[in-house]
Image (cartoon, rainbow, N blue to C red; front, side, top):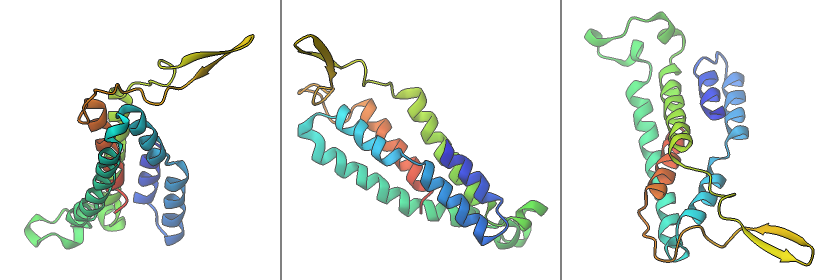
Length: 171
């Protein structure tokens, strides 16, 4: 959600320094990639890790290919659209990078919403108690996924989709 707010700030930035500031904010508040890797290693059986992580990288690369294409399609419609279909909005002429940044904010917010609504926290549910004398500590098992679970689970698809939605704004 912080990255989406940074995209909104970038949309209406009026100087290069402001754009740099908002991109720095986006980088500072974004923790999706490490979280996605952790969720992926927990959700997918160890024998599927090479394929799963390769697909995670593939989703990143596809998103980085499509992101600039989406941005180019909506870039400065007050200036670049053919004459009959030009949008006559003063704010679009004043902020020519607003629509690509707003589109980025939409993608990032959709990814955050997808994760928030579909993925459930599993960390506390799968802890095993280990006794060390008088003290019991919780220990995370190697993987939440069972050894017979398939790769293409709904959790896996949501993780890959959320990374792709986030990474679309990076291109």
